[in-house]
Amino acid sequence: MKITAIPLDKRPYNYQFLKDIANFDKEVELVIPKKDRLGEKKNSADIDYLQEFLWGNSSTDDAVIISLDMLIYGGLFPARIHDLNEKKLMERLNFLKRLKNKNKTLKIYASSLILRTPQYNSKEEEPFYYGEHGMDIFLWGYYNDKKSRRFLSLEEEKDFLRINKTLPKEYLEDFINRREKNRKITIEAINLCKEGVIDLLIIPQDDASEFGHTAIDQNIIYQHISENRLQGKVYLHPGTDESGCTLLTRAYLDKKGIFKMYPLYSAETFKNIVPIFEDRPFQFSLLSHSLACGITLVEKLDEASACLAISGAPIVMQEAFEVTFGIDVHGNKKYPTGRGMKDISYYRCRNLRDFTKKIEDIIDMNIPVGVADVATSNGGEKELLDIFDECEVLERISAYAGWNTTCNTLGTVLAALVFATLGNNKEAIEYFKISRIINDWAYQTETRFDIQLNYLRDFGATYSNFNNKDDEILELIRIKTTEKLRELLKKSYNNKNIIIEKVEAPFKRLSGLEFKITI
Image (tube, rainbow, N blue to C red; front, side, top):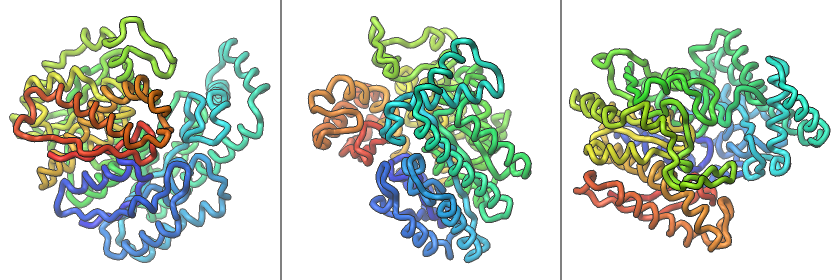
């Protein structure tokens, strides 16, 4: 099976994940552009090259998976800052019509993001004015949307008046106008689904909120999907950087056939929790992501091809660095007791040892298990992995993920679980699982904020500016992450020599790192 991929950008979760997961099955050939042709941060990729790449590979492909944000805007960050006119954007989208006409049996799987609206001031990934006015731009959209659908409190009305007086109109107009152009592209992509040009479209979003700019776009898009009866071909849900994995899985399962999955929860209450950075209870995201992948959820274990074990928060969801370091990074606060600031409900309202025993029992039934470690955001949970190691289950599970947002983790582990269940390359399956434990827990939960808070200043560096000390900082990250991994693995992988050879930072910042390992 041959699949050509145009990823969202060159960061590992958008690029390397696709290569690694496709490698689970030796019968899958993934063709993907070289990293150096995909742009970097706010610098756009070469669109002409991407079109030529697709054109040259589509005649013999079984399928193509395409990030429309890359193909049309030149990448995720360029989609947020571009000044392209609508005519140029539509021309780039309509390239897909020519691609389909060239090979009418070609399956086209695509993603098109709803622009995010971060709830903070930062220009690193947004237009320059977001550095000073970002939070007010978010709040303007929040208040405007909430006022039209519900009502504002007196305090909200006062703040809305303040923002209308102080927020430069030209910045707000620029932000809204770009959103409108990008939304029109997504609407037209939906129309291409109706015409049969695109076979499946997913519309992910990150930094979601109940009200605001993103919710306004979402509502318009939902209505268009509904009016055109495309609920079986277009899926809209939280996420972003996992979208390539979702498309890859759908293309794979459309060839392989039916895949049924049984969900096992550490806490059933997590079904109805709205995770941090997301806009709906988890159970609805699970359903949408599963359907987009081509997975059928089942209620009986004996009907399942595999099991997804979901370690979620029972009542209150925290960020991993709050638990690990006793800090609130966003609020710039440090809790007096330091490490161990886990909400007591994590202990009272679930039992991770019982959860682990159930996983062991399912594996004993020869049913593969993947683990979605989503009890916290922005990193996996130490207690869960400690128990997995103590019970010697780490080597027995088929897939693991626990990074960034809940749906980033969800889309990643669904893809890994499907390919691990149906694939035939055991070494590749194990490599990716260990890589995720290293990156998602040992680095993101245990090392990243230690580096960010306690070491960067010694290099004169910041989160997104390494001050030309890249080698030194990345080597320190390698050493510290290796230490955390060795602390974890007391009973697991004793017959393997896991080495972190090198750490790379494609966008030269502390997130989105790639760990090169040998086993």
